[in-house]
Amino acid sequence: MIVSHINPRMLKTTALLSLSILAADPAVATTTTTATTSNTSSSMLKTVKKVLPRPRAHWVGDGFNVYPVFANNAFSEAISPFLMFDYGAPKAFPPTRKQLGVGQHPHRGFETITVAFQGEVEHADSVGNRGVIGPGDVQWMTAGRGIVHEEFHSKRMAKEGGTLEMCQLWLNLPAKDKMVAPRYQPILDAEIPVSPLYAAGGSQGAAGAGGGDGAAAGGGGGGGGGTCAARELSEGGVRVIAGSFQGVAGAARTHSQVDLWDVAIAHADGVACEFDTVEGNNVVIFVRRGRVEVQGKKLGPQDVAILNLAGSKVLMTALEADSRVLVMAGEPLGEPIAAQGPFVMNTQTELRQAMMDYQSGNFGT
Ligand code: MN
Image 1: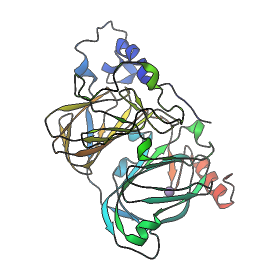
Image 2 (image 1 turned 90 degrees about the vertical axis):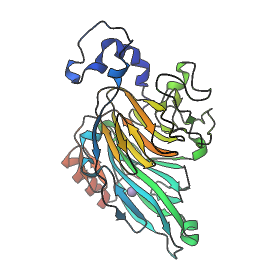
Image 3 (image 1 turned 45 degrees about the horizontal axis):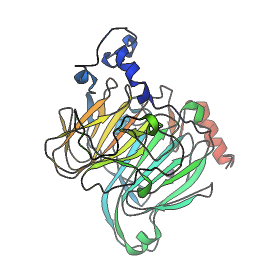
Image 4 (image 1 turned 120 degrees about the horizontal axis):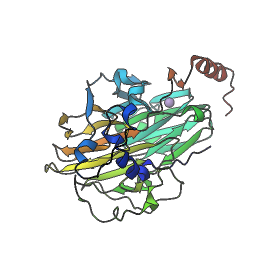
């Protein structure tokens, strides 16, 4: 079952009028106050809750040397709906006889999203999906009720060697969707719509995303190709992997409201770029390259900022040219998290069931 949720941005006007965005405590968000929407922009700004210390890298299998950048916030409500995030900084691998990576292992109850920035990652799973992703491509795998997969460097990388830079994000599924059929969305770079950046308080980017028509706001909608051709990021822009940005709908189909933006800011010219997230979302900012300032906090390579729930607007200024940042935003699921190894369920009973089902070959796939 695929849920095509309604984009909450379409409800923004209502939220503004109820002033829920001004309430630090959601419990008082029902206060009815008559207000104009002018002079409220500073109140809509999200604030930085914490900047995480950089963790040590560790190996996943023999192919992925990654920083578990959510550290001990992983698998907690503090970053829901996100669970875990591994980042593999650029690393040169010599040619090898065997493909490096991780052999067959199971997952249930969540999604793995792998992005290749440099080099190639190869995937094969028990549902019969196979694929290689290269720079800019994304594998969005929904484990659902159960999948067994393997993740390796591509055959070409094994043969020729090369530099690998990648990340893998674990995204939780809502309880009602944990047992959906597994699904694999290979999303090529060319299929990911790109939006221009917007300066705070006004449009900075080129034409394309204006107009205010709601037609493009159906985030999570069908798998048909977007009409927005991908453009070079050399002048900066936002690759909308999931969700929507400035009316540009993302490429991936999702089970809950999630934005995943791969951001490039070309110039350190002091211009604050504006990122409008859905109110009340958990927003996590990861700096992949360069340096940026977010709400007064300076962030460098591999820094992670977790923002407070209140507010919606994020301002980001590049402190170095060609800064690259991943913005992850999503509606907190507010459901118990029971995680063990490759399984993420809601209860210990469900975890035990997952292990028994896997061991008995009863994943249904
Ligand atoms: Mn895996």
